[in-house]
Image (tube, rainbow over all chains, first blue to last red; front, side, top):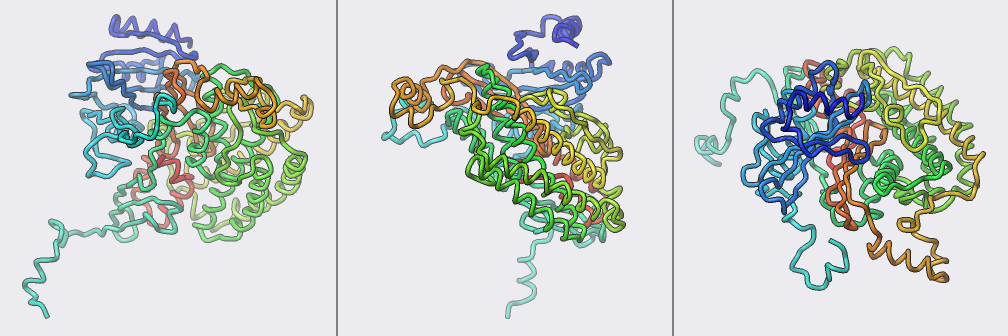
Length: 165
Length: 409
């Protein structure tokens, strides 16, 4: 199964909603609106010729400069029979970061979505138990967002132009 | 003496707790049987578990956040502290990820050297896990016996890189120094003495009546559920699915070696034990094959020719202009790093260890996500122990090869 086959099947089914198709380092990567994420995931999982029955990884990336689509939820799926991996991205804004949960399709998504909520504040609609997983319950912010720098930014003894980010 | 009426008000019982027929038991986080910081709040009906609620995150150290500020070559030390029972595999996984990003060509000899190190680490990890299943079922002998050989592996690591547990081994592009003759001798010594001990270890437990009774049918999971839960590594293979990153997505020269992928059938604790034992034998054969291939190649090669990323030898930095420039560029982060996103996975000792790296061209990753195998499959634990005895829950936990450092990142 080549990337083109997968892409053709997806485009035949979903048409123009599949956007920004790339192949970084050989892995098919595409983007779709967040309203369609469950439709696309269940199609990828249930279609007998695709069989992406395995959710390898789920994570979130924060792009603060992309207004309106700050948070990117990345699904990494795999067909373990043909050993094909694909990456599916869906963007959400940071004011109402709501994405439908994939827990009904993949049990793997349960803790991975809790982790994503914990660190980025993405609200997964329909998640059975969306509470923090690594940090304490009392925490009132989402630490992996880019607005929280790692070091104390009031320090004046370090020139950041010289020492990286 | 206080009035009994007022003191009663201080006791706050949960609603309906007096009529409750079951009891709540807190297993962990510092219970010796959990082998790490794992907490499970169990709802028990006598000896039987009705429900388990795992709590994780006790040793979360924010590695993903720290990695966003560290230069690429300093992130290796973070990976050490994921699965610290086999840190060389994590180190190599990280180097391979960066090499994939920058498109570095790695010499064959370096690839085989990496295989030797990774497979030694896998043996060490499996020895710990399998012998601890023995300890939890009441057989301390095997544990003490194989730890002698784990010690030999750690001595090899010490000879190669100078440290034992958190190894920080290798660099982007290869190794920091060549394997010494002493290292090769130590590997040979290990390969000669270990098989006999491994056989004895297997004789001790595999057909042991008590061990079989304690582990067969305990903590089993079906193949379909295991896939849905994202199982990888020996735990998935024990259910009968032959998914192994080394054969499915070969890396670092594994495609040149001949080896089997052992699988189980029922996915219970006993099968996981058998699969790991079989993998130890496969690893031994892989080390032998890799050593044979190393001997045929130019013995002076131990790193790739990528001066933009591989630190030059210190004596050259003091005497040669070019080496000094490269040294300065690497340390000050002036090296050009391509933009891009890359996912690279290695077969860790307990499953697929993935690195999802997004580079924006800066000296540190824009985002780095670790796909930690045991964080993902630990979700299935409540389902696996539901309805079983408390003592079975302990055995199941140790057979899953959970490493708190990796789970909590």
